[in-house]
Length: 248
Image 1 (cartoon, helix red, strand yellow):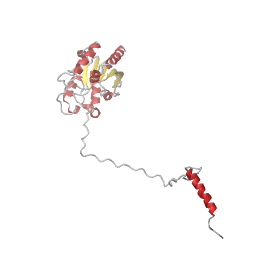
Image 2 (cartoon, helix red, strand yellow):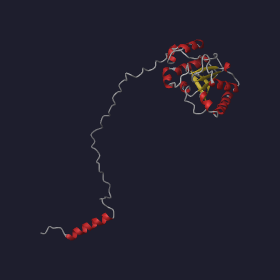
Image 3 (tube, rainbow, N blue to C red):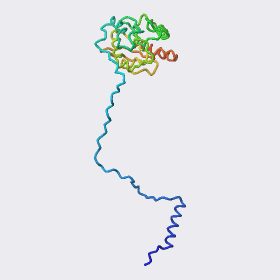
Image 4 (cartoon, one colour):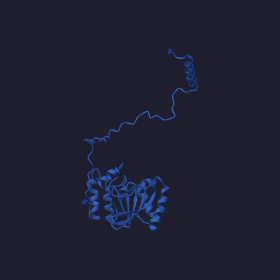
């Protein structure tokens, strides 16, 4: 029996393939999808890998020492000398520290972030102080009638506020407010608010309350004095907030 291919059949096949190739079809297609990669066989859930514990860096600085709450002064009279000498309040010893100003029971306590670079014995003796005095004059009061304090004991450019919080500065500030016992608390500086349990102000002024040891004090928070100097349009917003705050 002749097993040679039929020449006519080969011509038909070749012609059909050439026709499809000329039409741009050079691959084989199926109507039903085909899963080319079979799913792996289930060999049980492998145990999760544990990352190796990081090794301590011998060159890393030690964590900052924390203030002992029991060491905080019991009254305002003892607070100022402690503020000027306590080593754990900041790095570098007691040099250039500036004391708070005012008396216990003041109607208004003002807290700024830190002293000015020009400060010596008087807190806020430079441009920031002049702006604060103008704000107080517009509000019908003066510096001698308020209690003025700073969250840091001395001027600290580029202060690491997170490290200060870990050190215990926030606890010191809250204790300071309790010792003063003001009727109202005016905070100037977004870095101060997290120390007393609030978020930084995104607006030039906002109303809050300071809750501590079972008590609640009305709180007005605003930007730091240098930001208010750079943004004159923020001052009317602060003024309206002040009027709303003091009218309550």
